[in-house]
Length: 323
Ligand code: AHR
Image 1 (cartoon, helix red, strand yellow):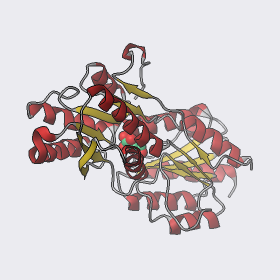
Image 2 (image 1 turned 60 degrees about the vertical axis):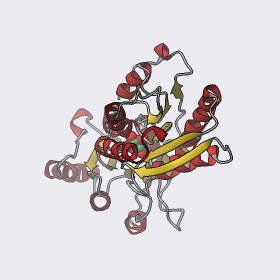
Image 3 (image 1 turned 180 degrees about the vertical axis):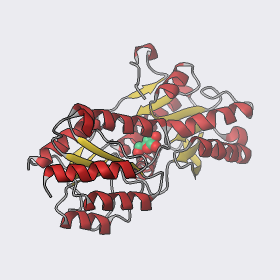
Image 4 (image 1 turned 135 degrees about the horizontal axis):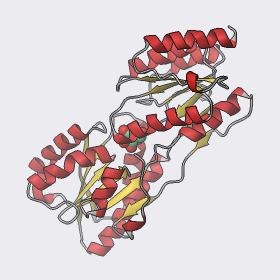
């Protein structure tokens, strides 16, 4: 199909699809057509990530077909099939879970469309189903969270610390790797006692539910809460206060992401440590898509540089977060 024909089809499709963003009006001659399937809107991280990708597509003059899967893998698979049917130049997506992508990615490969994974990865026997991954090193994030806790334990001088973990979406990359990195790093330190890991699905409401359950079961036995994202931490904090404890003092709170609301709470002393996970992946995605269109080789994995913010530092220096 000729470029103009292809664009007309995409414009028509954009009018038909809910949640599809069209940036073609802003750029007279888009350099390429990028289909992006976002997994949902579960957190301010995710909303910031969606906004960043839309803004960067605009800046780079790339025509973007964005679809939001509302937390359902079947919606993502359907979106990928629509991108294949409309012959976009590059497909990118953030897989909600790691398994179950082989068929649709083989279809993309047969159609000759390169696939870029953004934020999360997939599991497959085949290693040629996607060209590259742009996203955080989640294992390192878990290690960084554990290393903060080991230093905090030294400062507190306690013989034992009882830890509860609130994890993200079952079978997702950040859930698996943040858990593994943390557990591997604390293994062998006798002070670290994990009471239980519960699944909070990266949602604020589930974070609150998990916290109520954990407080009912363990009460003041809990010394440390390791939460896989800010959203669940924001849900858990009021429950801790309602139960009569002071978060950040009676219980050590460790979170991941670094959105503005959580950073403000860290500054107020109710969170002790936040391991950064940046949602600002848009520029790297656009540059990668342009390189692929030009037939260039790209790096198999790109991880953004990330920081750790904690009560060990001068927190007044943190720049506005933008998400
Ligand atoms: O995959 C990144 C994670 O997903 C972020 O930590 C979380 O907030 C989001 O929902």
